[in-house]
Image (cartoon, helix red, strand yellow):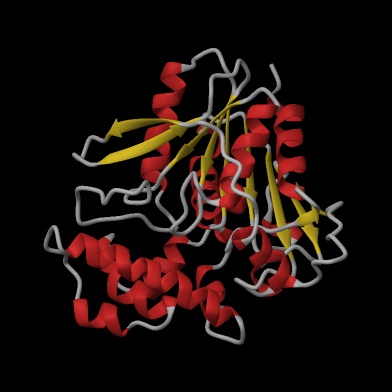
Length: 317
């Protein structure tokens, strides 16, 4: 189902770039006190979990976006609002995103569903009597929707939500090569290259360092680094196999997706049509909102209003 969302942008923040940049750069950093837990993985690596203070309600796992963490403004805001609504919130950091490089050459990628599944299995074992949900933002939303679609009726979640998802990775990457969106690409690629350089200083990596340094687009970086690190034959193989859009029909868990047509990280062409969604998926579209922004007013954000309400309606104990 596709419906028009009830988001109304703050009148002093019109347009995609203001809606994207202002909450990312100027939002006050109000963060919950978090408890970190290291989750050891079967392959010898680790994931770091950041837990909000204890709460009695359903457990909600948050998946951040590219080079994000629990300290990212959107993540901190969602954690705070979920905790305030009585949910037990926590953030799962993708490998290498918690402030410490991970142990293995591999890192994380847009279709990284194995680590997500392992984390959910651990939570399911610890909280067998509580409903479990997950919310993913941007790259984390793509991984979440990919996993939901692949696992279908066997998925253990009771409900899910996703925000500003790059449904078609190739289409999103090509959009980032145009206009002002190149500034976002430059910023994120700079962070990816710094993380790669830190890691390369600690271990040998099966990538061409010169090609990685020369990469000035996501497509070039993913072809030189992401694909070979994670077993793909190249960037096109990676984007084809890890774009969540073809998996949306397989989702059986009640799932809310919030998305803006003017998201500067992609074009409206990447947004799936109603026929591409399973009956379990509700896609709420707005004309404005940017990428993971959606500022409604001073200190008010649509995802922080809408997502806790969705989980409250779907899985409140």
